[in-house]
Length: 327
Image (cartoon, rainbow, N blue to C red; front, top):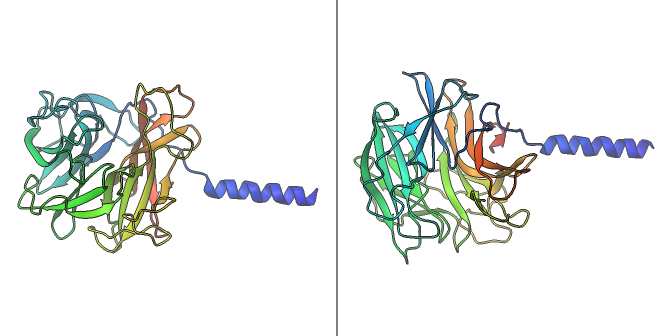
């Protein structure tokens, strides 16, 4: 009996150690994909951007809502002349060179006829966005697909992109946010050999010299789908770290994120748990109000029927161990 009690206690302790925090309250009914967030200190509002409806815009006075749908970034579609230029994907927002900068993707499912465009705004409010058109493009036969953008500043502006094919890449930009300064495909950051890796996000927490590259890996359930992938093959957020924003990045086992291995490289940050299924499409941001880092992502409700929409998840991140932990 004592042994059983001890075993039960140890099992409970182990469960507590591996338990993952659920999302912050206030966002469980906000339908999004590939969310990206920024705070405007002048208007004292958070702006959240999402795939679909010409890049949906939501605003809120707090991370816990209420979130209000207020319009779209490009209500008249993108000027990029490709299929999908009214069905824009994977926004990435930042404040760069004195303006708000939003990269977006133009493509169709499974196609390499893709482009990453960019729009700028003085405030992020609907009606203030100027579309600057394409920055990076891809075509069938390229080793990369020009979707899922992410911007960093590491000794100059760097733009990463990529999904499936041979992975996630990065090029330099100069002198402005729409001017490539190096040739594609650029530096290989993660993925390869058709691995389902995409949505790279790179960040260096304040007070450290370490850069972290987050990416989504696995099959993402789309609205209208009739099935789910085998257990463990669904979307999840993985990470590697390194000494430069240009990589190379390594997981906890010391393997490069560009290595082709089984199991695949990358350290788990956020996977399915509780009623959260297939989380991904993430962005990572230092919230200036709380002073804490957050991860923003979409997920499907685990108890929802196949083909259900995805919803907004927001959690804090703790880097104190040297690796990001969802809290």
